Amino acid sequence: MGLEEEIEEIEQEIRETPYNKSTEAHIGRLKAKLAEKKEKLERQQSSSGGGPGYAVEKHGDATVALVGFPSVGKSTLLNALTNADSETGSYEFTTLDVNPGMLQYRGANIQMLDVPGLIEGAASGRGDGQEVLSVVRTADLVVFVLSAFEIQQYDRLSEELYKNGIRLDEEPPRVTVRKKAKDGISINASVDLDLDERTISDILREHGYTNADVTIGEQVDLDRLIDGIRDNRVYLPSLVTVNKVDLIEPSYAETVNEELRERDIDPDDAVFISAEKEKGLDALRERLWSELGLIRIYMDKPGRGVDYEEPLILFEGATVEDACEKLGGEFENRFRFARVSGPSAKHDEQQVGLDHELADEDVLRILTTN
View 1 (cartoon, rainbow, N blue to C red):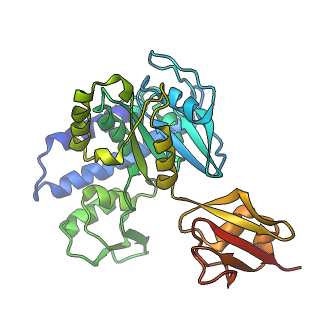
View 2 (cartoon, helix red, strand yellow):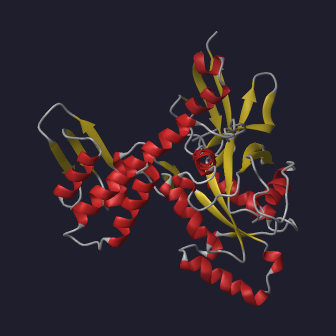
View 3 (cartoon, helix red, strand yellow):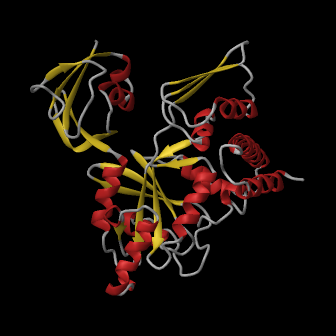
């Protein structure tokens, strides 16, 4: 029996086993075993190669992956946002390779990746699914591109991403595991856990831990516990866009909204667009900026003044040290102190160190040693 068949067999047993207190430990062991098998399959597929890959070098200040089924309009959207030359068509599988484009917005260069149509079973190795998913894992933001007539495709897309260890709009579990030489498994939780210690210990053993100190800082279910144990999960923000709204009747709009609500997506949080007619793209650009959490830092350059035309682009929460690292060279190696004016400063030209947190539209001057 191959790995794919083993994975399918475990998934079927999980589906067919009723979840209750008496089966909790058993299901936990199955899910832990499933995670191990999937990672092994991924390693095998990565090492065997086979066919063209989709490795894309990251450029710009941030990277966005456009995820959707074939022919929902991803290529058209990419072209509309970036003037890239991605082949478009009304039939499936038009995009055979990852097509990059660069969106320029508010001084930022945002790399947009039109990935090949994601198909069901991608996480299990169907088609070129693993290569597609590996590109998504490197992004800073996942954008679902859905047809207004097929909102249900969101279910299959999100499931494939989840199966591949991509966690959307979640914080990493507050779970740490430290191996030790002896004394078995010790569990220290700061909350009253619903999972019992036997189940937690069984899951850890399935992952190869026989002696370990486990710290759990939140209420976790089986899946969150396994996510906390494994180190191959990726946590990304996401945004839902609904395309082809120019083709729907006004009376159908509420049907679309209801289908979104059924999937816990607030219609007010989705962006409704027509890539073909270039409608709703200004709102989409604004949401991409906010969801990525980008900030503009205007550099005060000695002898040249403040550069408001080409800001340094960083992520929210960035510090002066992050600015130095992105600038590189003398700023990183010969830093003395910095002066900041703007939203993050207590007063104009406040003298700060590397740990000062910057804010959007700060003016920053970095002084270096001779």
